[in-house]
Image 1 (cartoon, rainbow, N blue to C red):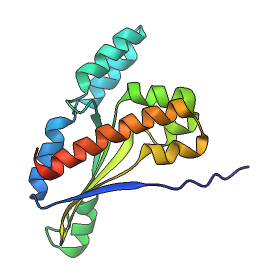
Image 2: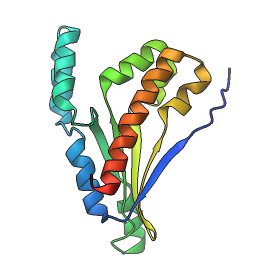
Image 3: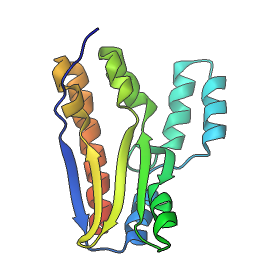
Image 4: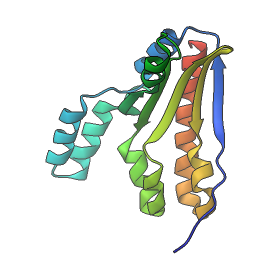
Length: 166
């Protein structure tokens, strides 16, 4: 039995834009495939190049795709009877990026795809993400770390664009 301590860096940006505008911007830049059809196509692929083509069609301009979305605020709103708070958790990533990390560090599979949290607070809409590089740093694998840093850059660019509307 072993326990590994991991220090996590959280990237966070606060937007003065409306919650719906921030979410819409994220949706514009992230692929949103029909996941049942994606899984069926991915499973049917006979070669890795066929699989790559399926993934390339599924990702958005950010090179990421949405795997799942959870409306965490819905549960909170049921208890309050209010239309607030609004909190969404997106599970997003790219299977090809995950592959590159997991080939080097199997434990990377615990962290990919990633979570993006968008929540509305009194001071604005917060967009947060736990940096993959911080999660993989303790494994001391330069190749996996490079891929993680590239992923971090993609996610942080996506979140900054959604926060600023650019």
